Amino acid sequence: MSSIAWGETIENSAVTQEIDRLKTQIDRQQQQSENLNDEVNQMEKKISDIDKTVYSNEQKIEALLNRLQTANKQKEKLDGEVETQRAALAQQLVAMYTAGDQSYLRLLLRQDNPSDISRTLRYFEYLNAHRSTKISALNTSIAKVQDLTNQMEKDRLQLTSLEDTLNGQKKSLQGTIASRETVLQRLNNEIRIKQDQVERLRVQEAKLQNKFDELAARSEVETPPTQEKAEPEPQVEPTPTKPAESENTEVVQKVEKPPTQALTSEFTSNKPFSNLKGRLPAPVSGQVLHAYGSQRNEKQNWQGMVISAQGGAKVRAVAPGKIAYVGQMDGYGFLTIIEHDRNYMTLYAYNRANYKQVGDLVKAGEVIAAVGSSGGQEQDALYFEVRKGRSLQNPAQWLR
Image (cartoon, rainbow, N blue to C red):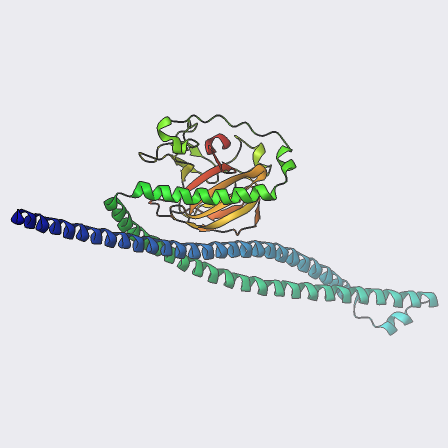
């Protein structure tokens, strides 16, 4: 019996050692995964900073081009005035030459009537004053043309410098994006090894829901009760649910637009959000990769829609509103949330960079971000959600 007990002790000890070894290995893999995730986040922040600078320089270049265009029109107008003034002055000089070189004294001696003498002197004064005015106006116009030419030259030099800087920044941006893709691939491999992607997505969705709960609670405090009765509430179609997925009943409903649906971004209205159901433009043009309510994995459905678009494409507000949140969130990357009327909110995520700040008022069609793949996404796209307070809405029902 003692030998059997001794054998069991040895076996238990070996099992314990193996468990400890596996636990240490799992902990090490977990730490590596967290380090890789931090590295991806840092790279996405760097990409965001570079993209913001690129966007700022693009705005400066656009302003300079507009200024140069305006200055060129002014210069053309001034050049025309100078030519007109020169032509008028040339006519006067020709007239003087034709009349001959006659002094005041010779003209006075040729007058028979004393009253003609005074009138002739007055005419001479008028002619000389007019000639002086023309010369002065000509000199002023020439000076303006010169000043404008000098300013245009400075603007052109600044424009060239900005364009060179912009090209360098874009190269740096592309290099950083490529490095991020390498690290992201390593991170995804780690996640696949650990088989914890579903749980990771659950945590990410919970964080986002907490943020919307916070914004909705704040909006309910700030919004007077009478404001909610200002106009009829848009009709929301009932949401069918699946018993097996009771935790996500708001998400599961019929998808009106198939994933292959192409969306276009054409902004024509600044009406309140609540009046535009079925008439909203898409925040960016592109193909719908994942529709609202479609299956994301074996336990989750998509709570918004994912629209494929080129990296760096401009993301635009679908309706007027106020920026309620701007930040970075695990799984969603750089995201912007806009508060609209009647407690409606729209979310724009996976952005390469956010261009607005909390509290900014935006109009429909105003650029608020750039399309990206932040949050660990494997391709450039925009994640778009529509909510009524804390409740999810189907974006397809709102887009035209």
